[in-house]
Image (tube, rainbow, N blue to C red; front, side, top):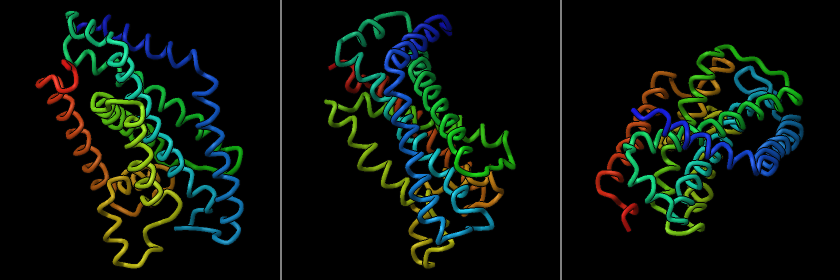
Length: 253
């Protein structure tokens, strides 16, 4: 494995992110703060607790997951799209680099950015609500695993997209709505039985449920099931990346 090459790609991507650090950090941190004010204060005054957890604290894991998913996809998709757009991707494809090393460099950088933002949102949340983390190791594990998985998805989207508009298509029209409908601001137990079953078709439900369990030991879905679903999605993303490099889809054209 060409570790120096992976580190070089990683450093380049992190340096590009640092150059726009203000806009990269301010917007993702301010938006959740507004959610805390609107949902935590306004709605929280009417919904005091869910599953024994104050409403303001209950929505924290969902808000972190909402930003983690969107930022992971956005960071990874833009990271690989720009080399395609400028043509520098051919330098990497002609260099003595394996597909794994290229993917590892871009995905690890995108996941690092998302994890930093997730931790910043967590720190911001402590200014508004009293938090507890019952399973800190599992919290970090789900945070890292989700960031890597959706960075892989973003990598595939960045290879698939033909323009900047398509880069925004999946995060805005698919991931964000699924996250809002995935139990970010509510528990599935408040839904009618039919809608509870329908909600289980939403893959984001398992991500939010597992992450919330690591905070408060309460979950809408069993942790084992959630972990299996995350692992399945990770395998699917890895399979998609493998197919792209095997066939040269959108790489050689």
